[in-house]
Image (cartoon, rainbow, N blue to C red; front, side, top):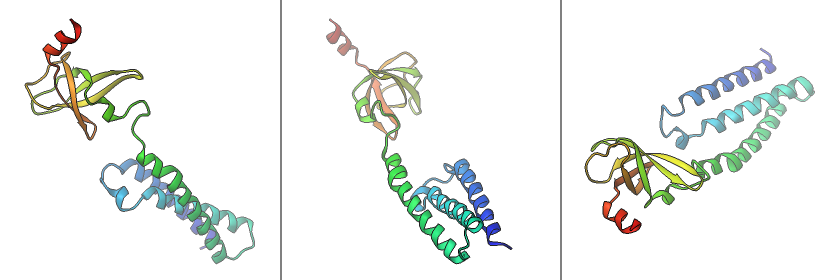
Length: 173
């Protein structure tokens, strides 16, 4: 079997691996902490593509081509990790707000919140409206349209209480 064919098989296998990784990345939680499949597959794809190109276009030996393509792939994947993956992992979901900014704000229940379960709230913000999953911090179940106060947000879920009626009277009278 020709070395160029091996590079093409490795390229095709890594491309299939990227597709499978995209489809099943959320099925196994924590895989990204053990090893980063995107970086590993990127390394294989870049090595294979450069190796195939050099095998076809240069008179260099196969071992030298493998070393050159591996070094280039290592540099490219290192740069991808430093300048793409690390900043994206540290970025928030939205640039318009942070979840800590939503604590202490009033909202409206748009999906009823049961005593032991999840509902949804809608917060009005300068940059637009934000909907969040919500649970009760304390108190009875809340129907749709109830005014609530966000106490805290943990893992993207807001803990809410009914907006005290006396506060409404004091603020608007």
